[in-house]
Amino acid sequence: MASSEIRITGFGGQGVILCGYIIGKAASIFSDMNATLTQSFGPEARGSACSAQVVVNDERVLYPYVTVPNILIAMSRDGYYTHKETLSKDGILVYDESLVEPDEDAPHKYAYGIPASRIAEEMGRKIISNIVMLGFFGAVTKLVPRDAFREAVESSVPEGTQELNLKAFDTGWERGEEAVAPKKQSKPKSSRKTEVAGSAAGG
Amino acid sequence: MQADPKNVLTGSHYLDGNHACAEGALAAGCKFFAGYPLTPSTEIAERVARRFPMLGGIFVQMEDELASITAILGASWGGKKTMTCTSGPGFSLMMENFGLGIMTETPFVLVNVQRGGPSTGLPTLPGQADIMQARWGSHGDYEVIALAPDSPQECFEFTIDAFNLSEKYRMPVLLMTDECVGHMTERVVIPEADQIELVERRYTKKKPGEGWPFEHNGSDIPPMLPIGEGYRFHVTGLTHDYRGYPVIDAEAQKWKVEHLMDKVRKHADEIIRYEQEGVEDAEVVVMAYGISSRVVRRAIDQARAEGIKVGLVKLITIWPFAEKLVAELSAKVKSLVMVELNMGQLYYEMERCARGRCKTTLVGHTGGAVHKPEVIYAAIKEAAQ
Image (cartoon, rainbow over all chains, first blue to last red; front, side, top):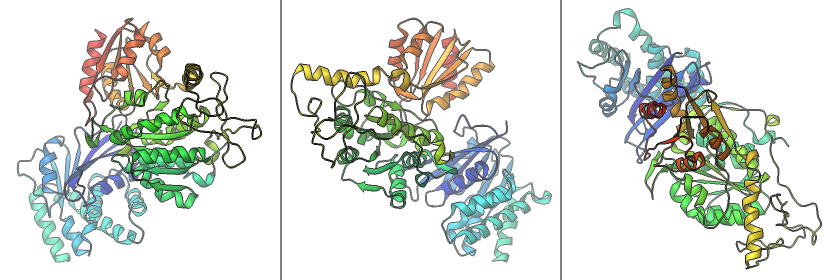
């Protein structure tokens, strides 16, 4: 029984829930796994702390909640600080380095950053940063095949924005592939510098 | 008869419980929905409102919950399958006319996506503390039917079941879900329309002047009369005779109230549904419903792994309560454990039916979150001793 527990954190309006929704949909509709998405949000949805949790399992998800996530996707500083301690010791941190600066002595072993907000702005729509993050997360974790993610993106975003969102996803995915390539696997801090420099040059 | 393919969104979808519930209603042939938005139930109304224009249904956003339930009651007499949804505070407001629905034997479905209470409590967080309100929330003596789904798939299926039960027994039926299930997103497989069996409204075959809306011989279910086809009858919350006209005496009261009770009590075996796992050799049986019936599984797995003989009864219908089952189990197990997101509601029913034949334990919770599996595990371990 292979199980992944994923927590996505950010603030309302960033597309945190949509990001979780697409992960779950990719796994349970476009791949042969089971995925349960639960969410928590404050009554004031926009701008307040927000998190989505996805449990992905080969078998039926009996216990639907994330207790010790093995993947944390941090799209806000607050979200990172609130949830970083819950990440399992050998868990994977995926973060938007435009917004989150992980602790030097953080408890997690694997950390991968991408300037998702900056990339999204450079693509002309800040709102797609969640999809950039999603692509990056997909390539880093290989949780489900790339095509399953792409189908889930295409069928989940508003009509007329599919092309832009798929481009955002692909951009994130390619950055993810680079991040997990052997030479860049180690230090999150240096990888962050490389990424920022790369994206500035690319823009 | 089978569902109309036009109403059925056949395929695999990634839906939350509320959206799945809305699809269940549409598949069941619901054509009138009146509602007032209330977190965490609003997505049901939103989806129905969005889908109805394509399917020929009528959605009305009413001024409040009282008006909502009254409107669906009227629309049901007007010939449509009807539904509304709400949560705790709105459920309280609807209780008066829920009773009117019981008294006038009106089929409709009322969905309560439970949140933490009392009062406005926890709008965005779960609870299962309206269980006794579902049973006794309106005044007077009556029986209810209430179902508790534990997943979006069950939200879809049980909403259809709720419509079928409401038509079959000609009474309002409650779907008691909760914020967790309502907002939890999972794969929902919606079958082909010809795989969905529906119970349609039964109308009298008698001519106007010969057929009456409340004729019964005890526990049988009277057919309804169509409106606008020449039948003249009265529908009132007052105690009434077979024609529907008020009769204010003890004899009419006995005739009416015993019927309201008997049509559920005497069909309880057909109505009551539950699932059992590992109960055969169990020393401890955990009972749970809705979201709690999923949460308990992790604790049960852990206890079994340690050699404790523990079984699970997942209640699908919470009302009428599975009295016979509890009586049977209590005679052969060491302990019965009820896990629910309240401080003891269905637990007392379980305790009553066990009649002291075995130990009974409540694993309660004040709501706002679900139980931690370790708390349930500890209770199982203690119950096994």
